[in-house]
Image 1 (cartoon, one colour):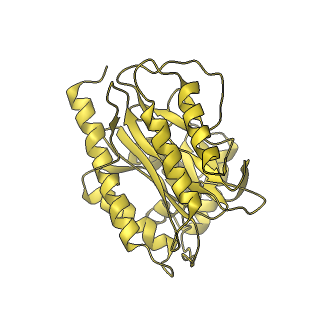
Image 2 (cartoon, helix red, strand yellow; image 1 turned 90 degrees about the vertical axis):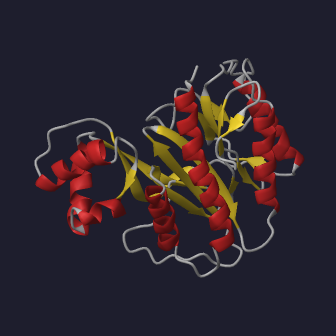
Length: 296
């Protein structure tokens, strides 16, 4: 069970990203740079008294997850793009994880993702199984005439742990784990024109502290310290490091850290057939009346 203070912190983090969602849906426009969007979201999280739980992911069209703008990114939002904004904030490690999809045109894929998310949330309560939630999501996607991304899932959430001890697939399964009151999870349906499977791709811009390891270069030691202490073990992008290390040295230092297993990397995940994907996500505290922290 969560204490009142813990619930309050989860709710506070949720309000921050919920307000950001409303603001960004009104402000994102074709021609806007992805880097400007990411900087605005991350700066707002800091100004609200929280910290990013991970760098803002901005997946455009077939890119489903793990794309965050590069150090000098010039990419912009184009007319008709499906732009997935996945963002998180935490307060003392109590975090909110949410995502939405923007498009300058009406998109049935976005509607399907939102309906699937609502369907999954509607069955959450203590004692419900993972398989029941997954079935509700999968049924809603198919009823809309589309298919899920089969190898991306929702997930449990814990303090200082943005991907907790269990997954919530977006496809039917036989997982009979029963949710307990006070557990926290994020439901995260990804919807494509038909069932899809995403694969790892370039670029790799997001990393996470894995373990302390002896490394030779000063820059690698500096980045490892930042990863563990400044970023609190949460994922970070290359672009956050430019205040501390030059871009060329960042590349070499990260390669050194990867080689010894001191950091984990997160390659971009995309549909290699080039099909567009929509995403929707909310964070929920399990209760008889579920608490959706990321909705105002």
